[in-house]
Length: 169
Image (cartoon, rainbow, N blue to C red; front, top):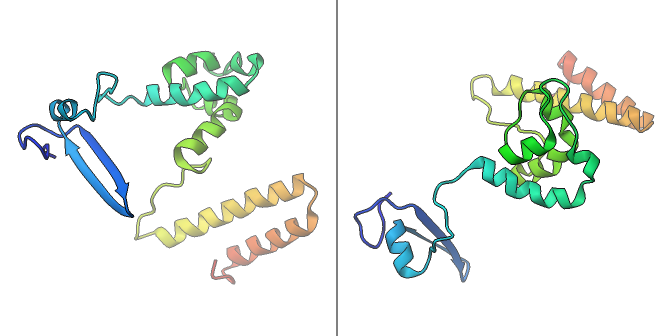
């Protein structure tokens, strides 16, 4: 996208403002943004996911205890402090090891604790059905753990209906 002011350089600064219920967007190159006072030296146009994670994790640090921050992944040996500094896990087991710490972080980033992704149109119905059953099984396990047996029985019956094909989802 080209800068809307100089119409020469690549736009790297994108500003969106809502004014009187109307969305106004302007796209500027770094030079024009500096001239107009939109950007300053503090603005970094190079985005780093590790920096984002590190920034979001700082808020959690204040709430977490020292023991939580010293937790270590048994699979790869990564400490929570190392993850916090790099923004990267060492292995798949790190997700389980640091689940308590990253749960609030994931909810800030994607509004849900579990990534759902997109579903292809060709086999979308089958995938949705599988996800629905998996979600019902998780809810069933939660109901059993909480000794809510009436809800557990209802969920069990719903799963059986779906698996038999008697239920439209």
